[in-house]
Image: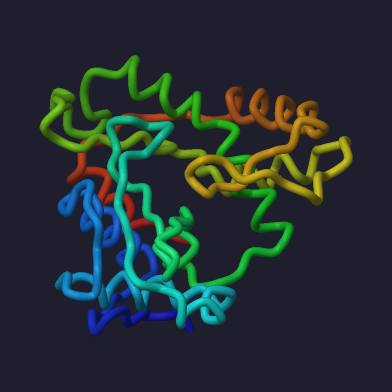
Length: 219
């Protein structure tokens, strides 16, 4: 049965709904520090604890901090945890929503996603309106780039089946706490990037159309 997560007293129907709520909350709050007096502290605290590995650090947490995404400057979705020594550690709120510690297969899939960020950015920059409803892109409204008919998971699975190169088992982590390929795995990375570029049909969607598509997505 698919999990219906409850985080900080808020019930969600799916993990996807939890991710959408978290992304919107980060955007709404903007760049700020979240201490125990903040009304959203309990939500972020319980979100952090959804990842099993994090439970051993609970006694050292004093707050959280939201910052601008260092790669995608138009997004405010970089979340850090603050410990009792006032040190900050970037965490993946997306992983927290999933509620699982990642194995090598998960890390490989995420590194592949990270490697095609430039293709996502190119589509965003070269598109002027929503693919579905025709709404013109503006700075005031959030627009997202998504796969049209050939979803990322299908492209990824097809690539893995056809791949002849050695599959990486060790990964780096970038400035947004996402897994990325190490230099020695550049050939594998370039191979996936080229495969994705040939297989993907990327589209720009306005916030409403992207939300409708996400809610209707079938696994």
